[in-house]
Every structure is written in C-alpha cells, then in structure tokens.
Length: 115
Ligand code: 5GP
Ligand code: ZN
Image 1 (cartoon, rainbow, N blue to C red):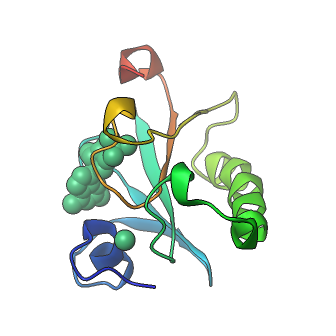
Image 2 (cartoon, rainbow, N blue to C red; image 1 turned 90 degrees about the horizontal axis):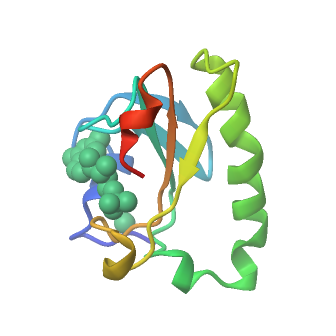
C-alpha cells in the first residue's frame, strides 16, 4: 500500500506535515505547497497508485468516489462559480510526484495557473 520513499505517502501517514482540508477512508485532500491559484488543492488516494497508467478495474469505485467528492470540496472552499481539475501523468505529462493526484484549482487568479 505505502511506498516508504513516496512524499505523498508520507503526507498521508502524517510523517510530513500538510494543510489537510478533507480526509476519508480512501482519500486525502491537502493544500498544494506552491499554489498556482487562490485555491490549489491536491486530492490523493490513500493507496499508493503511481499514476493513471497504473489504474486497474479494482480502482473503479475509488476513482468514482474521487470524482464525486471533488465538487463537494470545491463548494466547501467557496468555489461557487466553478473549478478546474488537472491530472499530470508521467514525466512527459509534467508529473513530478509519482503518487496519483488530482489538482483542484479555483479562485480569482485561475488564468495564471499555467495549466
Ligand atoms: P505534479 O507536477 O506531480 O502534478 O504536481 C505535484 C504538486 O505537488 C506540485 O504542484 C507541487 O507544488 C506539490 N508539492 C510538491 N511537494 C509538496 C509538499 O511537500 N507538500 C505539498 N503540500 N505539496 C507539494
Ligand atoms: Zn505514495
């Protein structure tokens, strides 16, 4: 489940501090350390899945839950007019942390988000 060398696994385990905004049995959401928008969160599965490339049928319920939780969190963050989600996959896709994560961005400076 957990990769001892993975930064996001350490954040999920509480070994590295983060500003957490949501947590349940399968998913954790915390603030990006280098925000590209007024609201910039990262949603991660507790399970160490490297990227979209490693998803299997067993993850279908997890992915559905993540998709359905995103708009709930966006509303909680005050993003009433909409939000942006980004998933970088693989080095060529701009992925830097190799633990699957969904960027949730919103707020008044979204145009500068660079995605
Ligand atoms: P990627 O390019 O892999 O999709 O995005 C990785 C994201 O993780 C970046 O937006 C980066 O700012 C964020 N990040 C990197 N290290 C940390 C950290 O230690 N804590 C938090 N909260 N975010 C991080
Ligand atoms: Zn991990």
